[in-house]
Length: 321
Image 1 (cartoon, one colour):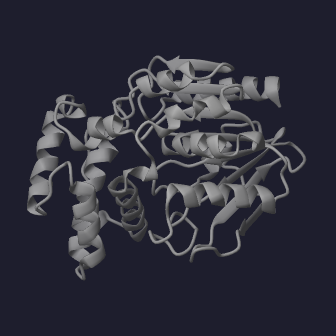
Image 2 (cartoon, one colour; image 1 turned 90 degrees about the vertical axis):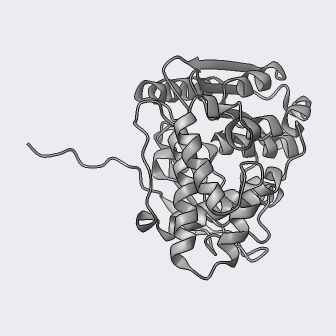
């Protein structure tokens, strides 16, 4: 029996924004060139856009734009953290809108992509027709402490993994509280490729195991680390070390600016990396919002969670586009 061929969508157009601050930002356009326009923002910080991100939408109806944030994916230079802040990313999104001559658009994102979507909408509310958000990460000190820097949070659910992490951090004379700054400095100053790969593997072994309860714990080895992994971890550590370039509670404090913008939020009930409380707090600050809690999903959505998201997004766009 022949295996089914991949059905990943292909972009009808790709390109780069003009170089700014030393960065060339890659973008791709999928779907119907004449359809209602939506930009979808990838997670991380330090991940990249993927064709699958466009598959959450009916591409016969909608024009879906993706882009790789500074230092990520096909954007150049890969792994660069200079002139790479949340404010720079917001400016890039607006430059992309202007380049493509889009008057107003829908903005979507999951996890860090939702962080960025909220931040962009609060800066340019008049340019946003609607928000499609999932697995929201507010990047408040309490959110970072829960998942990364303080005992008594997620560590209580993963005591075995936390102990392995502590052994790893001790080797590099770091603690959970200062790990982002210490590990970033060691990556940037080290001339040993082997040492850099060891740091990256250790960092991936923590966060990568917090995404999905349907899989056993797995551990990346230094020999499995790619240049893409190094770039992604470097960008992530840069953002965490700088408090994600947000003031405490900044996104919640700014919800009044986007209160009436149509919004749909989906969040996994058992998301332990970014607890559903974060989406719940956002929806309380909005007046035109639908919030859907997915009963079997974690931070990484299950298959039925992805199906529910696609249906919810299609219904939302059908109503507001």
